[in-house]
Amino acid sequence: MRIRFKPWARNELETSPFYIDNPQDMKNKWKTAFENNNKIYLELGCGKGNFIAQVAKKNLNINYIAIDLVDAMLGMAKRNIEASFGIRKSTDAEVIENEIEKEKIVKNVILTRYDISNISNIFGKDDEIRRIYINFCNPWPKGKHHKKRLTHERQLEQYKIFLKGEIYFKTDDDDLFAASIKSFENSGYIIKKITYDLENEENFWEDEENIQTEHEKMFMEQGIKIKALIAKL
Image (cartoon, helix red, strand yellow):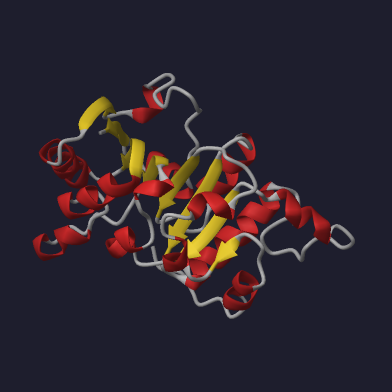
């Protein structure tokens, strides 16, 4: 998804207490970035942060890391998280006056900027990521671009280095979903659950409700069924 340049994004990220600008320095040390020993979940391609803002607020006992490559996206994600935690009234509003200390409440989220195609440069086996979320990633439909897919075998092999749990994946794209199933199986993952109509599946994610992303709502309004799976090593 394209997004307009946000001139304020870089400055806000650099001054945010829950943004890390050099994630490569954190490889095998991500547990030290949080003030607790809770499990760490990772979202790949967080976009505007609608998903991570909601899931992190609902599960304060889980630590979340959200990655994207575009400053404007991460800037919006930062503001969406602040709005979710009550630091802003909305993404367009200023931080609530006299309540800047509320920013310390966001202790279970870290945003960072990196190229996910090289994710093994920033996560190692000692990081023990317990869950990876892949929500509506770019389907890269042209054959020559398939290796860029976040569910391509090349990527799935990288995740094996640091994943100690499951991958939660959902998409609107039929071709991407079919190819992803094959990639998971070829890479030695076990597909634990699968659905071709997430809206009509009860408790599909087992331990958490389905949080509808901006893309998800848009696709559902168009009558497109959401496909989803849970894969584990």
